[in-house]
Image 1 (cartoon, rainbow, N blue to C red):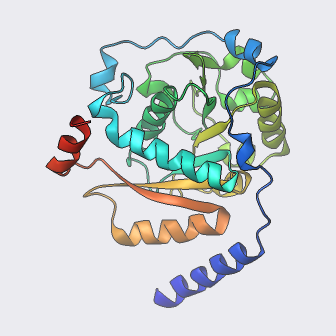
Image 2: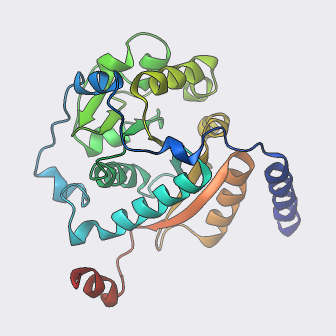
Length: 274
């Protein structure tokens, strides 16, 4: 196993050494301009959230405040890295299912909605399940696979939260997600969405790395990724192997330990003292 990990580490270093510079520049993350894309945003139907779900489904960043501090800190660190590197596309993934990445994606979206000068599009590309749609309790007749296959436009499918966040959800499972996520149609769909809506940040909820090959072809199309593990559930070995796999496909922005039951008392005290 050590020999395998060393080989993966060497491959990762070689990939990083020959990887091209980012196409985007830090100037890309600027206040929202007054352009035609604003009309495209305003034309989308607004996401309706059942207030009872906020506590039940752990949408702690929806209203902001002290409860959202952890996600707000993650959001701020994420934005700083985006600006420093000129990145736009971020994937959220995990070693296996059950690490809470869809819940994290939803909370990051709500946290980012309070950054009024940034526009964010959140897309659920974990097409074997309806993670974000179930967490947000949304129903519909189509999924992102239908958008990619041209059965429905993104404009007809997407939902808007506030003035600066858009969700692309899945309302049914897809039989062949790996092929769809590796297709030229997927690349063209993302390019079209970016051209029409001009987001500053695109956040993708992607399939677990060790459950299938669904995300392996797609992750080369993002600028970076966050790897999520579940406290007291995901082993260190699984996180280590998943991080090495992820590093072969894209830049690893960081590793997030989710579902933590214990946090420092000083954290809450310091936040409340401002």
